[in-house]
Image 1: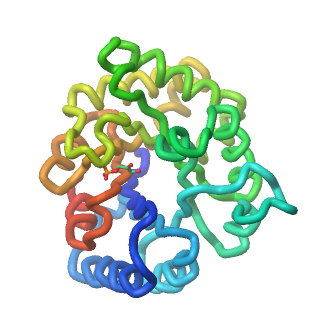
Image 2: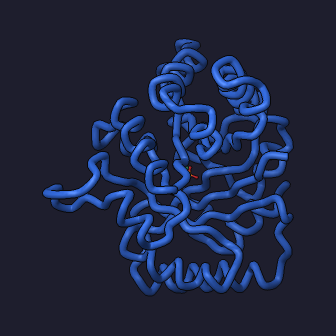
Length: 253
Ligand code: 13P
């Protein structure tokens, strides 16, 4: 059975004190509530809080992820953070190709593919984001757009490497807007992604890959989204900044 994953993408939020309180809140919730043993909880704080979060995680049952990684291996790239650094801090996951990085920092599928390679070479699991913008959905191009993103950012990988990857479908029009994809809309894309994976790597590999939904996912809609056969969890933005909402989502399977 493939893993259920609920990952919190804090984005550029929280002071150090707020971050510390949020992680403590998550720990408290986890002490009170039992997550399904098939559910992996991942907390993705901003870089400066990774160490503090991993210190807490060692006493608890959640994994830690970064929100981005450099495309280069090492050297004179001021302000960048490498996969090697993340590995040396025992970070488990890293988000790549988030639509905000694509839109504001020019991250292309080619850059995403390179970042995926760096992460895999250093033993981190990439959480690779794909998803169409509103105009593309209105033009009925969502399947084609997602197909190109999946193929261009991932299909250079071997089947073995692909099994380390998590995919997140995040329709851009649903991110931070309060507008969630309906379970039918999300399931259609998730099934599409899985069939692309099956076509390239075979059904057995495709069936092992967790595909998360992201975009205004919250406690009130997580259950119906997670009930869809190809939705294996969520990548949560706003609702991951409240410990009780984040854990309520993780309990929605
Ligand atoms: P929201 O949950 O705030 O819509 O953000 C989703 C997201 O972008 C997670 O990566």
